[in-house]
Image 1 (cartoon, rainbow, N blue to C red):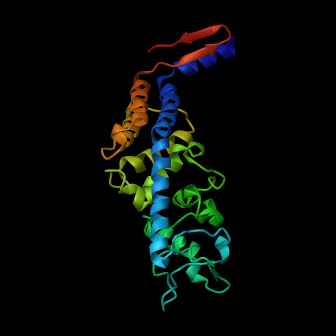
Image 2: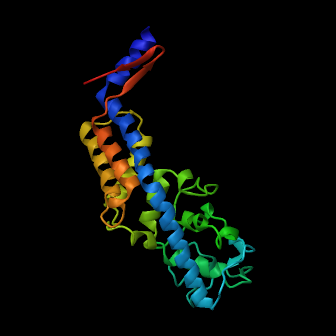
Image 3: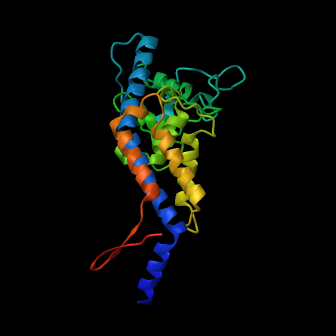
Length: 263
């Protein structure tokens, strides 16, 4: 009985309920971004492939033979032994033992990934990607824009958490053209990514009302971006759910039914 009372008291704590509901908000944010992300990542891949075709006068883009550690980019380091694309962790810095793509494809895609990265200096996260799949799998290219480990085995938006999806729009210049929001580090995409970290890493598992409302408002702002997201049905549904989260009262599951706590 003492344990049951403790659980009930914990769930009556408004700050704890705010923390739980903010995690639920992240679920709805992912629901609203998922299909959109899959579509835009496919468009990005098509854009890269077309750029490679134009550059090397190719009718098809196909390889699957290269590996990242041995891949020679299309560009070469300058006379000062620096990457002309500004990338610090670039294969052009270590030309010895590097091999050009036999099909004139992978080195060109490598360049496209760097050129499209919006960090300064550009810093693709190569550990998330498999070069052999670049020609056919749009997500193997897209994961270079998720600058965090743990995504190497993921193959589509449904397998990627909302943090990873937010990273895409924060780091990819192409995907940024699909939203009105200007990525500055203080925008709603960036603030929501930081909010996710704060929610998941909270040691107190509590959250003030003002902080909770701001987090949910920022999630809504992401999904109501005025270029395309605003009018997408999955975004509209997710926003409706986020508004409900703001006023939702938690239930406590008991062995013989549900009890609702108000206040």
